[in-house]
Amino acid sequence: MKFDFDTIGEWAPRLSAALDTLVPAGLRERVAAGPIEWLEDALDIVLEEIARNGLVDATREWLRGQTIVAYHGSRLSPEEIASVRTAGLRTLDPVARKGQLAQILSRHPGWAQASVGLDAAIRDFGDGQFGRRQGQAHLTISRGALLTAFNHYLVEGSEFDQVVAVELLGKDARAILQEGRSPVLFTVEVPGDRALDLAERWLRNGEMPGLIRHALQFWANWLHDPALDPGTQHVDFGMIFYEGISPDWITDAALIDEARLLKSYHR
Image (cartoon, rainbow, N blue to C red; front, side, top):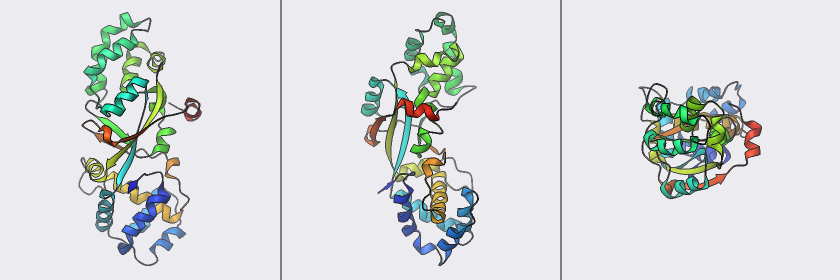
């Protein structure tokens, strides 16, 4: 079974069934009645009557049995899209990006003068003073949020490429990076145990794992309002991989309509 966060009408009833033995009589009705002012309120009501650890453990076990659907958005050339489908999503290697970036940015009239700063910019924005993205690949769980609230990845492409280009050549360099590339949304199906391992890697004592927290929080809000659409809630929860993402997990690479993106684009 799949856990696709935005399709709450499909997964929330299944999570309800998995938690049924923990939920006392009348709790669902109490949550439905509210009042609910903030997203956090519904889960707070649930936690008043269910032991936190038991609820977390049961949800963790349920999620381990799911395939977690996640998304990665970027702006790529047809050749780059084909490479991702064949080789998977690679972690950021700033040094490996140097040659390709130099080739692309050389089309800018100010490149000859700016190019002397390329090594420093790559170092600073890869794993230096201004960035910590080296050796990472990112996915997010909300397709709706990626298409609207955080769609600058689809409009502008790689954040690393963009910040290096702007640092060296100014904001107009973004247009050069975007030439010949299209917005593409990759659908990635991550085994539940792998997704939970990532979600729990950097937890402090007592923290609820982010994937579990989002599942429970939106499940509780679904009890209050079954019409809730998580894709409209601008959920920014990502999974950080420290190794490449297998092409076997990538199930789709969908080109996104540029005009649709620009209607909600903001930076």
